[in-house]
Length: 88
Image (cartoon, rainbow, N blue to C red; front, top):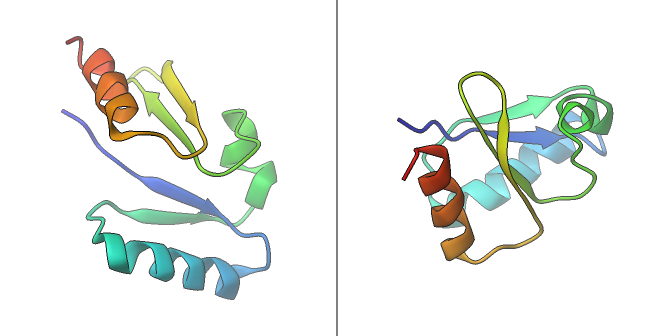
């Protein structure tokens, strides 16, 4: 199966990140959990080499990065990354 999670970095503090998450989540009706990384760009982003937003990763159960999509991407790129991660 697939689990989607969005991790947001705080650039201006928690209030900024919380507002940006709500602004994004509401019109797109995204059903996945949103997490705030209190370490900002020094936390999870640094662990996975994300230097800009958005950066999307497909990560296997063992932690291997299968695909790294940087910037706004067409839906076809996400479908391809997910199919690859699922072995399809």
